[in-house]
Image 1 (cartoon, rainbow, N blue to C red):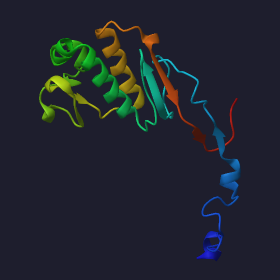
Image 2 (cartoon, helix red, strand yellow; image 1 turned 90 degrees about the vertical axis):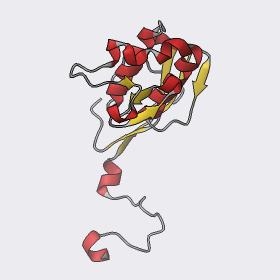
Image 3 (cartoon, rainbow, N blue to C red; image 1 turned 180 degrees about the horizontal axis):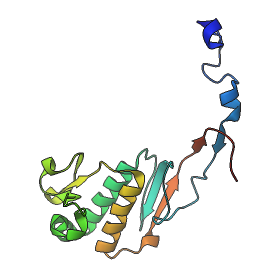
Length: 161
């Protein structure tokens, strides 16, 4: 096995060996204190936390979780309006699929929210970003009120800066 893979099994580094791939890997450390706006492209970027108004959350590992927490915060601040989201055409796709519904079976990956609302969470980072933007617009929250913080991003290969 060692001859075939060129990896020593008794190496104490456990995967941190300086292979050509490891040497070529460039880690871009996005400062977790640097805020990013909701209008950015989040392809290949991982969230760390967010601040919406006076509320802040950290140690978040997925865009789905940010989407869910934003929904919970808006539902707590505007419970009556949040319950009407399934009736708003803004939360239906161009093909008629609901993004917000009262029927969990109507979406692929339902997220249970307050007021009996279920949200579709089977989306990319930018798809969830667009839904968050729709929510902010619906509740008349300025996009600049939401600040997103990212964690370290690793790219294989050299930087194209």
